[in-house]
Amino acid sequence: GLIKRVNWFEMPIYLIPPGVCNLLNPSTIYANNEVNLEEVDIYGFDYDYTLALYSSALDEMIYNKAREFLIQHYKYPEGISKYDYIPNFATRGLHYDIQKGLLMKIDAFHYIQLGTVYRLCVVLFCVPDDEVMKLYGGSNHVPLHQVSGFYGKGPKMKQFMDVFSIPEMTLLAAANDYFISNDIEYDPVHLYKDVSDAIGMVHIKGYMYKWIMQDLEKYILRGDETYAVLHRLASHGKKLFLITNSPFSFVDKGMKYMVGKEWRDFFDVVIVQADKPHFFNDCVKPFRRLDSNGDLQWDRIKSLNKGQIYKQGNLVDFLKLTGWRGSKVFYFGDHLYSDLADLMLRHGWRTGAIVPELEVETKVVNTDQYAQSLTWLQALTGLLERMQMYRDPESKKVLQEWLKEREELRAVTKNLFNPHFGSIFRTCHNPTYFSRRLCRFSDLYMASISCLLNYDLSYTFYPRRTPLQHEAPLWMDQLCTGCMKTPFLEEMAHIR
Image (cartoon, rainbow, N blue to C red; front, side, top):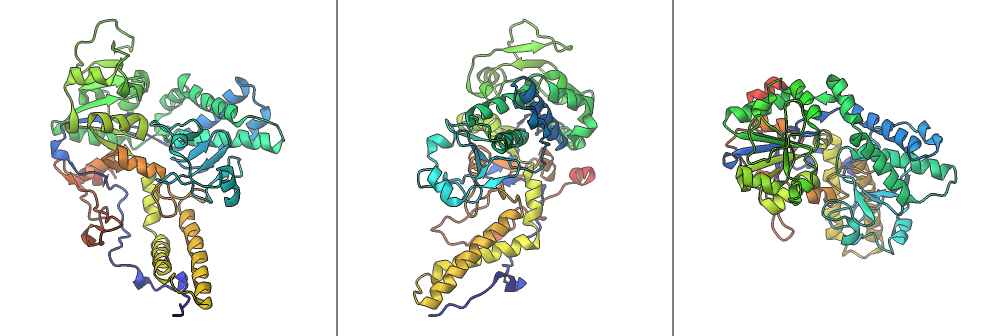
């Protein structure tokens, strides 16, 4: 019954299953739920990071201005100004323990992924696994009520869900690092609130809007693709609407740059400064109309008319005034909580999540190193499962070596994405908490709305039938969902 030792780097390439496709198309749309586009008559969009994609240069601007607010308005030490922005420092979907000052990755079952818990300093310090267990009462499980509420914030944890949270995490790290390095006593709860407020001030005071409007070419990416999507939908007789938290002057300038002066002709309803997620879950604020100069009007809103601009409002009135209900409405946004959760769970709209990280992660998944590492990782797991009954000393030794190698492979696979936190979609083997929410709140997800150009508007998306644990994996024809065989229409080929 002796088990023979095998090394992953000795694995011949032909051991990779033939069904594994390393030609994932970054412009694929992925389905969590079956969706027939022929049944969709109305398409709705968020603006920021949905219709308008921004360059990473914006993150550094947000960081620098928020750091300035922290020092000037909140009287934090001048020494923090020496901390420059660090690109690719963290990833979206992470949880932050507000009271302990720890940044971490949590899986779909509320377990902290050991090896991804960091004291939030500029040089990230990985907290040892035994210390993590001690900090959380002898377990790496975080109870439901602590992880987060419906909108991503619990009493002790904050989940960083939008793209704007990247500079926030980096600024938290800088301030933490300064206090710890200089032995200054501080309350992590106060620090978290002050940094959050400083990031918020960048938006409230309009700095972000001003930067983008002053240099649209620098900050807005792939505007021609936004035009192509809107033109295609409108030319097929679809109704379009926009619901955004951004102000009209900002949206107007960006849309004119991407789509043209007559951009409003594409939309049947335009709503700005909507105050999502409150727009979707309460009926307090009435709609107000803006005139052509963007000034508020005082007339009572009895209908939502094409060519007009509306501010605030609420979904209850929106449904009454438009009659747009149920699965014939499809709304796209980048924030799983603020944009999509209420619409899917309470109103039955179709929802599409914009996940820009898919482009980079798809490139990693397409590499030979990833395919080989993952294949051997799965093979090792299977070997451990089947051979664990062997109890002789030599077999036990080999099993221990396999366990060690499995841990090393997990680290290699993680580092291919982000060296600290890995993929936003997976922990070692389980889906992340982010992935769980993505599956729960979106029917489809994609890197950008331009992915719609890949598909005919009568196309039906079928989710991959992943076998349950008690089912046999018989659906081999589903393995290549999302590969280069995906339809690729002329419109997209021309834009690319």
